[in-house]
Image (tube, rainbow, N blue to C red; front, side, top):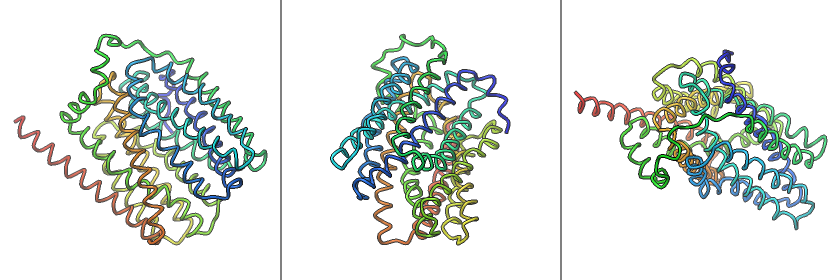
Length: 403
């Protein structure tokens, strides 16, 4: 794996390690918290409510987090949100009975609020910390980070909780936020010469982003992608567990193995994504098509080995595509508006993802999982071809107007 460039990006390296530590702690805690919730309540509804509470804050606080990132010190926002989340991460230690479930609900919601503010701020920080020529490589490293968290978290989170009890994982999660804040504190953010000069109210207006999107064909395509793809992704998120338990009869171990396969796919996507130099938008759309093909094949195979391969392929294509789309966004959006843009996209995608997961869960009551998987893969291909067609038409019209 060619990661020599990471030596040049000292500041991003610290951000990367902060993300690894942060993500690992959250994965450990989530596994233990859901297991504890089930053992205390015996209710699948309680789990559903908790998962919904983890997505709801993005609808409310996602735009706020993006705007804060465009107005205040991004370094300070990242450190504060990490330190504040320690309190709520440790609050799970107070849960002992059914009467304490409200603590799980409240803390899950508030931890997600922190993530809704942290996530767009972190992403908007990347262009400030890295060289422009390394932008796509760094965005592909972001997929590697998610993959590492999935691999290690999926295999280790449940084991740690089983051997030492869930409470140790809550302590580890609290420590992970502290360590992540320490990594962030050591980052030197460059001073933006434009900071303080632009009118802050103007920065906060979504009308500014609207004008940018109208003026940029790549942004229009990516915005459409953010509206359509999450509606399909929710199906895949639900089907991972269903495939493991109901189709291949592998139980919880199968869920961990399948998530691990997704992690491997994301990590290996770096081998391709970091070599890309141009045509990021087209490559991203092609990856969506190939992701759809992998999902269709996954829905039809009866062999666990092939299922693992297709899970890897799906995540591989997703990793390359995400790196491409994030790079386009960072190239097209000025630094002072990136926080708002990433906050907006996080709000849209997470809200639609939550709706999609709810609808997919309901659909499984009447539709066989394999058929739903086939629908998901086919939808990826149809949406991707539609995006490609729109891009070609708009690009052709633009070229004609400028001849």
